[in-house]
Image 1 (cartoon, rainbow over the protein chains, first blue to last red):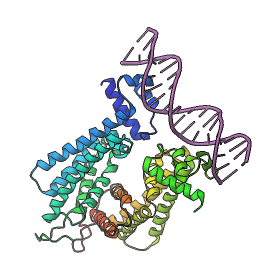
Image 2 (cartoon, chains in turn orange, cyan, brown, yellow; image 1 turned 180 degrees about the horizontal axis):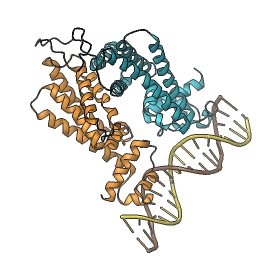
Image 3 (cartoon, rainbow over the protein chains, first blue to last red; image 1 turned 45 degrees about the vertical axis):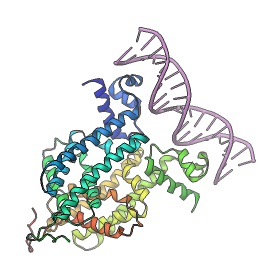
Image 4 (cartoon, rainbow over the protein chains, first blue to last red; image 1 turned 180 degrees about the vertical axis):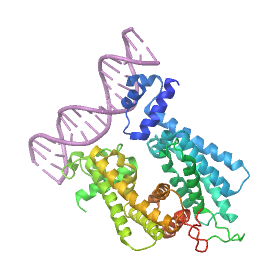
Length: 196
Length: 196
DNA sequence: GTCTATACGATGATAGAC
DNA sequence: GTCTATCATCGTATAGAC
């Protein structure tokens, strides 16, 4: 692993543990094992690190969404796939996802706008799928914003599940089922308007 | 409102917006309308403000839980009451709840331990109710930690619902139903083991 | 209680030798 | 690329006049 990679990795861990504002470049240098000033041979600034971490995650979500949108399947199956996407991204890089979730507000003005635009775009795609499910009677008639926010928030604690737990797979399946049960229409013998 | 009260109120708003570490006493002084040094005639330190905000919320949750535990009602009804408690606390003081949710990790060593103990106690009470529901067949057989975390996380986004929205009540009811649907056993004609 | 003045440590970042 | 040395700035908090 290159020094640059190691800096980004340790930064994600540090930012996720202490928060971006409380994490100093001196802390980071210690973890990397060099002097603080040496960091700047590899990175431009502290803000730049935050920016890259946040946008890498944002791209992962938006690309995942695009992939899922293309598949021809039921809305409820697409929501399952989106939940799996969240769990997969969180499992692959738990530190980065915490930074993405909690520290994006420290992005600079211009980056922040771009970030929020990307988030908005993701949320709109997510809600479109929910709406399609409401229209064909497979998803309950709650506000799509309500369902979006509840599902996404309900997934945010999962990063602190150790992925080496032997029951990690069961946990992920159960969490998915719990959330799906919350929005799924209990199909009453094919009647499409059986949702409360 | 006393100056001290106004300092705490503005601090909660400031900390919730910028995060505890990024919020400076100079920022706070500007919002209150006095010089930074004057703050210290009313408060002991920045840490002290954080401490009071966090523990006030923590007490509200633990007292609410105790109240609910005493009532003689079905586990599922108690979970409904707990959800209502979260929504009520968030509605009463949205800024403080954000600080409670996101900034507790900046508490000092000794306060942090006490805070985590209180949280643990709340979580154990919450899980006991879930377990009772699993045992009498009204709540699905998921891990109680899984259900606890998903419900509590799923409620955390609600603070940015403006309480003056005319559909705020419907949103709260729908959110409650969504979460309850997730954990409720679909009762199959009285069979107690009808949970998947 | 509020002010002015200030102590003093920590911060992000740069300059320049090697 | 890494170091030592350093800068300018901002942080929390205190002292003491009014």
